[in-house]
Length: 252
Image 1 (cartoon, rainbow, N blue to C red):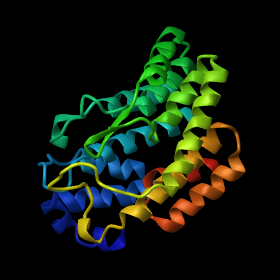
Image 2 (image 1 turned 90 degrees about the vertical axis):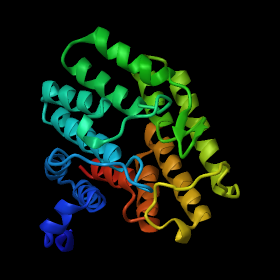
Image 3 (image 1 turned 120 degrees about the horizontal axis):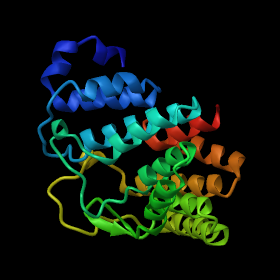
Image 4 (image 1 turned 60 degrees about the vertical axis):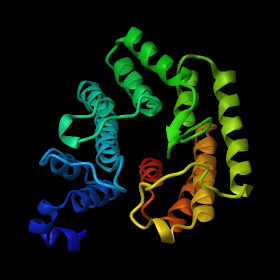
């Protein structure tokens, strides 16, 4: 972070470095700095950087919204979650129509519930609970990190048995994924990673499997097991955004 901050003129010239600095700010919990940086420029799409600005925008406002909820400010929380739901024009990209936004809908439901708007809370939790699949890396996946939020929304709606079953299904899927051979099952000219040809697909898939297992354990109330799994994810990938965010929340 210090190295990037030492060259502000260079950061101002490059979209990719701006997003890298945003990611670092979010990774260390400086979400206000990330928000300021994201709103300071108009991004242009670049090969290999698909989803970068949008991903940091969502992560930033979800984090700021969760912090506002924790500080008993549901009005500000709702504003941040609504910001996460929509892509401002300066990001230079929009969300895919098949993209799963169950995480945002879940948190919007929580904010509305805290505001006493039970009808809106139910609307958002239903949207989160009923979304099927997730479009990632050019394919639709039955299970993803969004499955966890669908399960939490089911629990919020009072459908405990269905929610717990979905979490257990997520655990089973994650364990099977850890043992499955990794492959890219489509033709692509680029992938959203900075070092495509040095990427270890098998290791990345196993890291994803560990993360999904951690979510499953967390949703089922096994916080100790979840914490250990998130820590294992970060040992394998210190820049794993979601694992860092979950672990930070568990340590509060």
